[in-house]
Image (cartoon, rainbow, N blue to C red):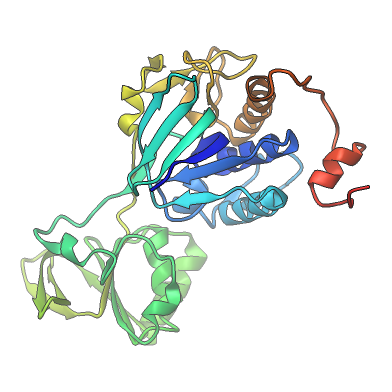
Length: 344
């Protein structure tokens, strides 16, 4: 697969990574975005898509999903290509000072600058620890739901007890043949209105709650057919299924970043506060992945860092072009880039 040549690569498609693409776009810098998760939004979408966020400037309240959707709309004029469901496994500097990046999907990039917006690292789903069950992954076993329609009229078993598991159980109660939620305890973690909805559906026979832990599975002719569950008293139960969805949460891993030669402090990338550049010129770090004196892990702080990093990168990408500060309110050029004005 031929390497993609670009001016910038953003590692991380969370809110700060998305806003980084916007700030680069205003400076006419094309960026590609890479994320290990199968959808944009980072922690906001993976951990609390429906939780309210109250400290985004100018937005009194929004959910993680709403913030992600708004950011995607904001960067839409720049059309940054997104490469999701793949992690960066290699980053090295070439003789011409550009950077070579390779991902777990076999994709390669050659870029003048790198922006690491990986939060606390690449998120990986906590998997179901049953020997051999990985063979069914992305066939009948799923840790993320990308196309809910594929489970219509299917018998679904969901493992997990947090809000994500409960909400998907509620969602599929109206589209699946039947839904069983398996959790090691009878207590579930979700907001009261969500739990009320869950228990109403359970009372109506739309959802079955099975208290216990998965101990095995059954298969036939290469097809996963059932999950074996042991309850707290040691009794075994076999639950038939067409699809198994597992929501045990996500585990952040710094991964190969530790091998890239960057100056680190407590698993965070050290940066300066004028450019948010790392110890390697041309590699910038924004958001929760970076550290500097006075650092505060807030989304709004990451937005500020992304703006300054973009201006610093422009000096690297366009060394012979003066980088001017313009305002989207008054600049015809910026409004044209945003699709608000037609070219003269």
